[in-house]
Every structure is written in C-alpha cells, then in structure tokens.
Amino acid sequence: MTVTSPWIRRFHPPADPHAAPASTPVLVVLPHAGGNASYYFPLSRDLAAHAEVLTIQYPGRQERLAEPSPDTIAGLADGVERALEPWRERPLVLFGHSMGAVLAYELTRRLEAGAGPRGLILSGRRSPLVPRRDDLHTLDDEALLAHVQALSGTDAGLLADPELRALILPALRSDYHAVGTYRHEPGPPLRTPVSVLCGESDPRTSVAEAMGWRELTEGAFTFRGFPGGHFYLAAEHGAVTAAIAEDLRGFAGVR
Image (tube, rainbow, N blue to C red; front, side, top):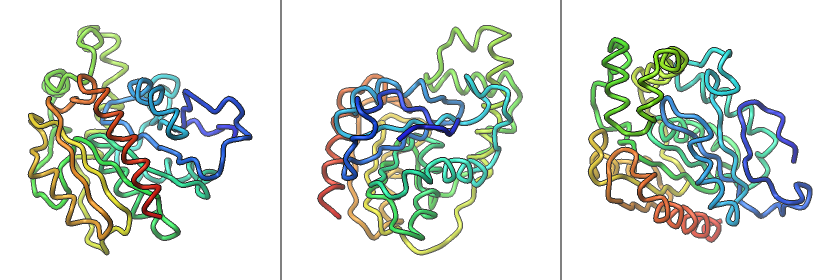
C-alpha cells in the first residue's frame, strides 16, 4: 500500500508493498511530546521482521515544520485516525510512548466502535485514572526546555542552539498543552489486550501508576519494567524491541 498521508512515515516498507499478507500486523508508533518519527527509526528497523511499522509524524516538526500542531489529544487523534483509514482492515497494534500512550489509548477507544485494534502497547505513562496536576505547558520557555532536557529524550545540542530551540518550541508547547489539558472521560473498559512498559526509575511515572492501566481493559493485561528513566527506550532498546515482538506474537494468538 502506498503511503500518501503526511501523518505517516514508513521507514522500512515491504520489499514488495503489494505482497504484504493481510495477516501481517501493522504496528502504529505514536511519539512522545516534542518527539518526531525519526526518533523511532531504530524501533522500526528492528521490528520490520515482525510487523509493517508505521511511525506517526505529528505536524509542526521536521518536514511538517510549517504546519500548526494540534494542541489537544482529540485534535491529534482526529488526524491520526484519518491517516489510518486505509489500514483499518489490517490487524492494527498501537504503540505509544508518554503522550503517545494517551493518544494510543484514545485512538483505541475510537477504533473499538468497529473491530478495534489487535493490541495496545502503552509506554512511559501513568494511567489516566491516577489524579495529578500536569501543568508543564504553563512554564516559561527556559523552564520547559530544562524539564525536557532533564528527561534525556532530546539532544542537548539541539536545545542549546537558539535557532533550533525557536523551531522546536511551538510543537513542544502544543504537545505539552495537549497532554496537560487532557481529561479522561469515563466509559466502557477496552476489549483490546493491553501491554504496559515502564522505566523503573521514571520520575514522571511510577510502576504502580503504570500498572493502573489494568483497570481500563477487560482484555488480557501484561506489564514489564525496565531499568532506566523516562526514556529507558534508548538504553534498553534490545530488550524493548524483544518485548514488543513478543507482544505482537501474543496479540496474534488472542484473536
């Protein structure tokens, strides 16, 4: 299938895109706040043998720099949902890290109006049932950038360059506003099986808070903790890739 949506980057397409079997899962990767598709290139590369990987590129970054970024989770979900329409008949698995986890959850709620995705993998984010004030989007530029740098998810060199900082800040603020103003609306629990991944030293999400996602699904639930903080994904890349590959195989056996 040819990718035409600017929301989707497919770094590692099948050798013959017309020959991809309908049973091959489609792994949709939803980046963190301030993140871009390229950050997840290694994940796409190492999971290409297990799934067709589609990495979401939000507006306001890289080749979409001139586009305004939605500043609500609903607005982001609208764009991703439209972009995924051609893949709706394929077995979808959603993976989201941090803000991407909230977005993946809300997309799953929408998709369950139909057949729903095959599985949902949530990384580095507390359950939305855990109450906490999240107003980082109200910080001034220096404080917000200091917070981002402390989480170790952005190259410090980028944040030190005034011109690059000016390019990064609008999308970063939109993303932090989206996740900071998000409020969970009560509704039926998911039917979709859920896997949760978490850095065991994450200053933003404790293991207990991540385990709280269990309450939001009637499907199977698994949890894995990894050494590291909020961006444990980088240092534990091999273990994380293996865990996602295992989830993809497990989700295939559920349906």
